[in-house]
Length: 166
Image (cartoon, rainbow, N blue to C red; front, side):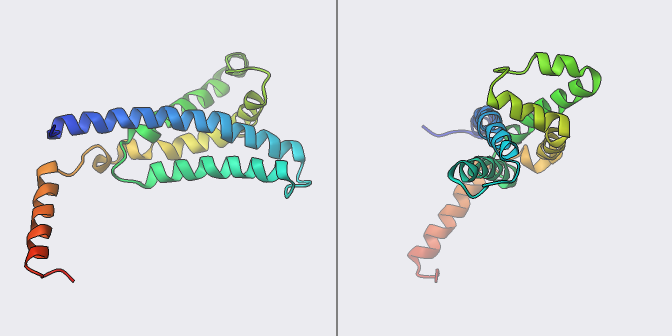
């Protein structure tokens, strides 16, 4: 089955929506858990197994975020939607901090404690602001035309058949 330009774009944005959910889950479960563990260590024994695991969780979440921000073929929804959620939650903290704490998912867990630390320190607002940048870059909403990609592939095949490629 051949995907047309419109079908490809909608599939790309659907994939972006799925990646947004994956990123939100990663931020909440790995990022917040790791942050809470690092804060709990108070800088001591960061080289212990628990400390390295926590740093790895935070670093892995950062790598996922970085890849999704940097890859131009990934839909802007992948980072934009979680960024809007983080900014909205940060705005709720500014307006009514008691509501922001009351509606935390899995309240009382290590994940929620890490989320509270990141939320009240302003780190989530900063992350959210960075994550929405792809939403305002027009090139992230458009993908190169599929037919243009196929024409370039045909040209490469012709050049290879003629022995013109190095």
